[in-house]
Length: 288
Length: 330
Image (cartoon, rainbow over all chains, first blue to last red; front, side):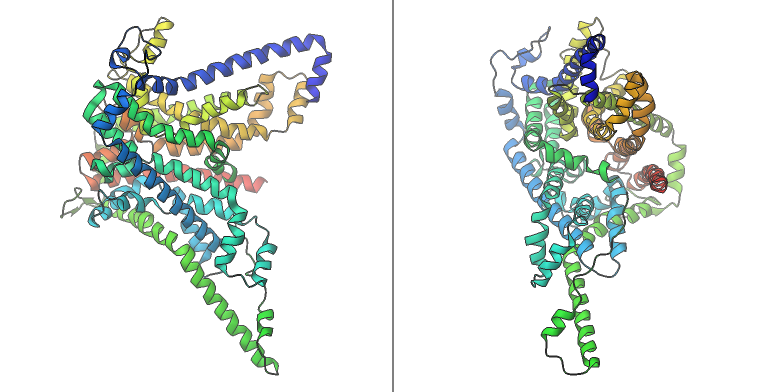
């Protein structure tokens, strides 16, 4: 700050200062446009007629924006059902993940029990085990349980919470012990301590873990893709695969309309709750 | 990761509750009451621990550790997915993988993909972070736009970019045309499909790298930069001699995280090229999927998965060693 003020008083310097600033703005605008362009292009293309899409030279704006592509996509795959599946699985999955992580972290921080360090190590070490190596055995297990093409088949194998447990634990360790001791003096049991003291004091972490879980559940692809092949059990990204395979790349408008349906909800969540979501997604860097 | 378990007092001593009872005279019975209450308290804590941590631990054991061990076992079998019979082949699957004609190509593709995506994201991400760290108006919007692709479905992003790259109607060929370039055959002619997948991966992950770097940059003390500026150091010199060295921990963290993520990437490749054409975009990860769920050779695929697991483990081990050394210095 002070350096800038000194600069103002030296006339030769301020001119030199301004030009990199202009360059900075130009670069920033350029970068923003380039990074943004694919998403804008996607939205525009989903509103175009086939003639407008397959035109050389390209037509930038749809002549008269229409939702025909969306209607066609909904005719080719059960788009409403997929949306409901995705929302349901995301809400339930993220909710359970938060609950599991919260409860597990509470036990690891506020309770004394044998082999606590071992349990903690076991939970944290899973962060280093890539899901890929577990996929074939998990697929066999889910198949033998008769869980292929079921919601529990999609949901249950991915529920275990290592990331959430880790974040919650980090946060719990910073909570003032005196408050919990006072609660205990008042005769509060663990259940009450958890709900009336720990949870209200953990809202930022709760939001971060919940939002990260929402994003990962919504976007999860490989596992639901393997477990489900009935259209009415699919999540949106898996349904997009079905549409790509049936309509192929011959019908871009329809495929892109479905792509908008997959991406727009999470984009809105991101735009509305940006700060908390980014805090959660980048949390690993702070703790790592 | 610094994971030190700080011991917590498990509440207050038992004295108050012991006093609440009606203790008979003499110390021995009082101690007995106290220890009995202690035992009850421990049992109570154990019950709560089982209730609260139990479900998560159970899920982890059943869906992470069990399959991890089973996968190692499966890698010693000649076994097809869904088949009732299997034959023990020892290290046969590994021998087959190391001598298979396609292995060299898969490893090369994986290396090119990983180096290009990680290196590219680091360089571009640092550049973007340096830009966003300047006091420019509207940088909040730029930050949002840069980070947005990171939260989107990889598969959907793949489809979107497939349209962008369409050689006749795509936006990429149009923009290339503006600068007088002809669009290469992105879908079919090697190495363009791999280039295409790399570009998309970069677009999706750039914002994450930039944001982590931005956090690192904001931790660089401003007076250090001011001092360098007063000494007449150019901004390039300040970057090289002051900012970059201070960012080393961030760089290292990103290097490892991005490598792990890149080695496991699947959905973009699935959406755009399905590993083709002629296997030119088949990475190690993608080949595991193909061998097991397209080819059905689950035993062999488990061996390939173990190879990938060992690579990831090696990357993590390097990180852990580095972090420990850093703690040592601090």
